[in-house]
Amino acid sequence: GRIDYLRAWRLQQRLADARLRRRVPDTLLLLEHPPTYTVGRRGGEGQFLLGPGELEAKGASVHWVDRGGGVTFHGPGQLVGYPVLDLSRWRPDIDAYLRALEEVLIRAIWELGVQAGRSPGNTGVWIGHDKVAAIGVKMSRWVTTHGFALNLSCDLRWFDHIVPCGLAQRGVTSLEREIGRAHV
Image (cartoon, rainbow, N blue to C red):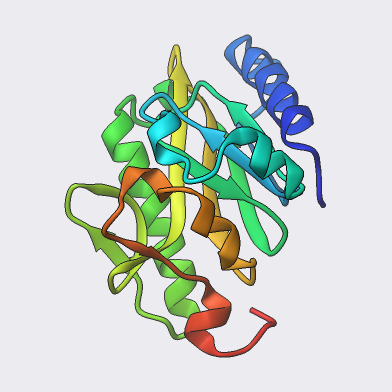
């Protein structure tokens, strides 16, 4: 369901600690956030086209977080997935993990009849020139947090206030836009 970003972040941290101690199995949180902008370790003020105060006035929260990547948007109509996995039990390789996340999303999108793929040098999932899924993760002692945001039927105008993932020359799309119907 829909959950506040900070509440979900704290839940991830608790699950990651429990996973590290082998008290819980690998877990996948699937949810949606109210309008939220997050800034990863590669993000900065220059990726905002409006100030944080202006974004908050529009009804969005802004959070600086410990994941990789730049600035992105999370909100209604987006499927957000937070895998909390112990990669030491799978394959302790961050790049392999990122490519695996991309592959899962690409295959799911293909099931809907839309050809999605990768963009060389850029993490995420793309439909042509436009990003449909952002990926930003954190790994601590091979346990993952954060994850992906797949644009299903979100209001893409929220992305107009940022330089998504720091990629000024690229666009953002949703499956609703690509398929031409609201229920994906």
